Length: 119
Length: 111
Image (cartoon, rainbow over all chains, first blue to last red; front, side, top):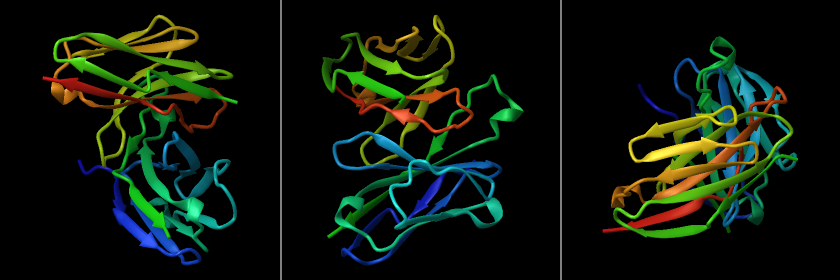
């Protein structure tokens, strides 16, 4: 079974430019999450999709970040315009619908991340 | 606000030298506590989920335990391949599924 994939693995852009990150979840996983780790800090939640709907976007830092999941499959996270503080590693994760097995492990499977550097 | 604190920040062990990593947490209502392993340049890899105080889970040389305030990841007779960053995260019982992570413990096991 293929895991969560993310593209690109690395991106270096200049301040003010636009970058789009892509995440392909594990097939059949309705839940898709975006997280971010900035240098020296913990991994922090950005937002959560259930299928194509945003369930929780409480972690999105500001309106320069736009996440979409059209059709409930892959997701994109666009940063426009990018600022220096947006540098970090962006992780995507997916999980099955926990309501199908509420007492089983509800683990989120993570992708390898996209390392974003804003110069 | 949910919070996770991990200690120590870094730990160096000799091969075969057992030890424990600590994860202290505060959460309004715990739905689950998760342990992940992360290797350099990779995403977190799931290890365990613990749901209630007193629960224990084991996998090879790792055993995770849970109390109402903290979790321990015990590593018995570690090998160099156990070197990694170990992350602890909690999921609150609020209906939302986000994970709140600690900063992790970097473990280095020397041969």
